[in-house]
Every structure is written in structure tokens, then in C-alpha cells.
Image (cartoon, rainbow, N blue to C red):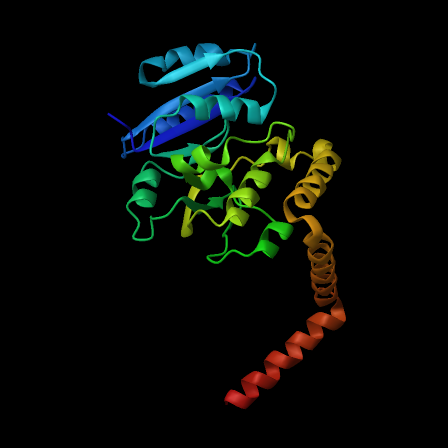
Length: 261
């Protein structure tokens, strides 16, 4: 029988983070899922953690891989669920009812269904309406996203040439293809681990290089125009943060209040 959801967790030498992720999955009140773990040949005790819970894991393997997205593609190849979610080692579902709350939400429909993030301090809420310009500025959270299996059947897997930002490339390809329905659910599905490679300052330059290549590849001749729009957007934001900009907004608000009264 086909499970509704395949949860794919990749890991490399993060035994403590892996166990946190496993526990957050296995304690869910919603149970119509299969759990897949792809380990990159860890030597820190991660395999022992997997073996501890293997009776509740549909499939796992520990072998050397070619990086994060090679491991995620291995998970896709084994997944049988109607939807796929990538919950990487260290990330945890936001409470034991997270899957139930998300899947039973009135807005749960579509092909790429994305929620929000919770951090140790604060969180991030994504827009309901997406535009090509949004993906110039940012991307969606793959940990808080359910992908219908047909997305991978039509688009393929993650581009393994990109070692850090291939998920952004994948989201852009899906969006620009106009083949899929994107749906936002304003719910913090995942407590996000900010110590991942995409947020590591040691990989900042590499990520910027990949982002540039990804945007050029996907936007083609339109990329220079979008880049100019983005630079203008940043300049406006920086200007609004100056003392002069803050005072201008404050005066406007005071005048508005006075007019209302």
C-alpha cells in the first residue's frame, strides 16, 4: 500500500542531530508515512543511531556519496509516497502534531505545498503569492515543503552540479515551468537548524557563486533586468533604514494618526 508521505532524511557525521530528527518523526500523531534515511558513510556513531530505530525505518543506507543533493536524489529513487518531504539531520518537526496539523489544513492542496520555519528565536513566514522576482531575492524552505511525486517525474531530481543551492535551482525550475500548483500554508512545520551548510559563513562565497549561476541559467536573457530590480530593491531597503528614512516614516505615521482623529 502506498504511503501518503515519504520523509527523507540525509545525514553525515551528525549522530546527535540525526537522533533528534528521528525522534521528532517517530513521535508524530500522524503515521501514514514511510521514513527513509540516507547516510553518507558516517564514522561518528550515526549508523548505530539508525540501527537503534531501524525497525521503524522503511529504508536506510550508509555509504559514501557525492554530496547533499546526491544523497537526496538517492532518497527520491527509493520513495514510494504520494508526497515527499526532505527533513535533514538536525531539523525537527515542530511538535508531535506537526504533520497532522499541516496535512489536515484546509489549504493543503496542490503539487508544491510549503509551510514556514520556526527558529530558536523567531521564525520565518513565506509569501502566499510567488513571483519570478521572489526567487531572485530568496527561495522556499525544502524542509517545510511537500512535493508531489509527479514533480520529480516531470522535472527530475536535484542538479548535483550545485553542492549548496541546488534546492533553489529546483524550486525555480518547478515554478517557471508553470506545470505545478504552489500552495502556502501559514504554519511553522519545521524547527529549522541554522547550522546547516547553506547558513555556514565558510561556504558563503561558494553559495553566492552557485546562486549567480543558477539565476543566470534559469532566467536567461531576463536575468540582467531582474538583477537590476533586486539591486534597486536592496538600495531602497538600505535607504529606509537610515535615520532620515526612519524619521520620514515616523512623521508620515504621525500625520496619518492626526488625520484619522
